[in-house]
Each structure stands twice: as structure tokens, then as C-alpha cells.
Amino acid sequence: MNSSTGWSAWAPAIGVLLLVPVLLLAIACSTAGLAQTPDATTAPEVTAAPATDAPAESAAPPADGGTESGGEDDSDGGVPTWAWVLIAGALGLVFVGFIALLRRGSSGDPVASQSQWHGSALDAYASSTAIRDIVAANLSADGLGDAAEVLERRWEGARRRINDRTFELRALEARTEDPEALALVRQLVAGLSALRSAVDSHLSLRTGDDAAQLTDEQIAQSESLLKERLAQFGGSLDAFKAYVDKNR
Image (cartoon, rainbow, N blue to C red; front, side, top):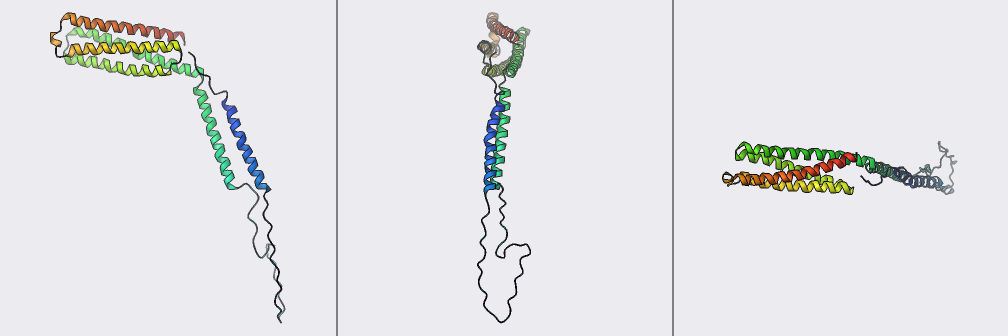
């Protein structure tokens, strides 16, 4: 079956293209930080000391060789903290985006997509075949003369299974892209819907208030309709299985 082209071949290139501007940003921030120089400190203004009789004592120079008015400039000319935070965040986003592209590429791989569809189609065929067998078995058991409660429980179980299989086939229909396969899946859905209507009619007939007054002809007509719908559904199943086997 046809499938869309995957992204896996483009994912590495896209990741590199996203990484390049981040690296350029890091280099630009680093260069700008190194180019900054601390402002020169202004030497304190020297004022003449008032004359006194006592000789002025010489002030001892600072032990660390700095000026008396202020300490060293804390700026070392490196990249500011906010710039490193920005760079780290950008790199994280690039990494997450790159991983997401790889996963998307993997899910879009035509071979993987076809394999997944094939597995789902086989599951749908197996469960639909079980429906056909259950309805056929119920038809055979109807002639055993069971009470209405037994008949109702038996056919209610078949109807619940039909509802479950209809939901499963609808999900498969939404995932089917090949026109031929899509037509076969829709044919299965239509056949199962017709079978469900025949089951509802037969259940209502056999468990209704007038069930005791039913004639053999009325029962035979209901069973004949069920067998006809069952045969149509079986033909759709066989055509669907032939397609699945052909496109392994």
C-alpha cells in the first residue's frame, strides 16, 4: 500500500541548521564579553594637609598594592550569566526538536507504516472471522428449543461482539490510504452493519411477546435473512484476506 515519504533523511540536516545559529550566538556573546574593559578608576584628588607643628606621618601603602579609595573591579570580561542561560536553553530546544524530528521520521517510514497496517488488518480479519463463527453457531443452537432468556443472552453476546468489531474496523478504515484496501475495509464495515440489523431483527422476533405464537415459516424467514447477511459478510472477509495476503 502507498505511504507518505518519511522525514528520517531530513532530520539530521534540520538539526544542524538549527544548531548553527545557536553556536553563532554563543560566539557573538563571548566576543562581546571579551571586548568589554572595566572603566578606569579616577585617582583621588590630592589636597594639601594643614600645617601643624608636628611632622606629618607618612601613610603606609596598602598591602595589596591597590588604591585607598576603592577595591578592584569585579568585571573579568567574561560572558554574562544571562547569555549562558540563553545559550543553554537554545541548545536544549534544538536537542528536543531534533529528537522529535527523528521520531516523526521513524513513524513516517513507509515500510514501518505498511507493517503496522498489515498487523492491524490481520487482527481485524481474525476478530471478524470469530463473529462469523459465533453467528453461525447461534443459528444452529436456535433449533434446540432453549428458553427465551437463553436465546436473548446468546444473541446479545453476539451483538456486543459485532459492535466491538465495527469500532475496530472503523479505526482501520481511518488509517487506510490505499484505495483498493480502503474499498475492501468499507465493504467489511457495510457487511457487518447489515449483519447487525439482521441479528437485531432475529433477536426481537425470537424473544418478543409474540415469540410463542411464531410459525415455523416466520422463524425460517428470519433465519434465511441472517444466513444471507452472514454469507455476504463472509464474502467480504475472503476478499479482504486475499488482499492482505497479496500485499505482505
